[in-house]
Image (cartoon, rainbow, N blue to C red; front, side, top):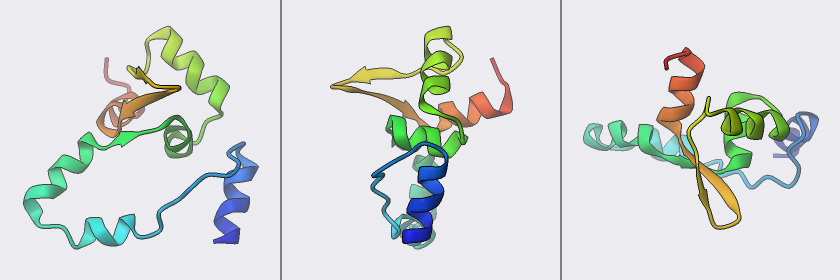
Length: 91
């Protein structure tokens, strides 16, 4: 766990809460639910970690409209499928 926290800190993410059981839950899910994982909602910190970019870069992409996100409460929320679309370079 400490090694994960250090690697997160090296890319600018501090005090991130990770659920280490998430991969196990996904592996044991019935096949019908695995498709809904694409619609999983990610926070700003989780999105930055997934994309391996800094928060300022992430916010720049949102401002430019390259990543479609929703302001919910104090933070931005984005679908994992949207981040996958961004990584593929689809419009």
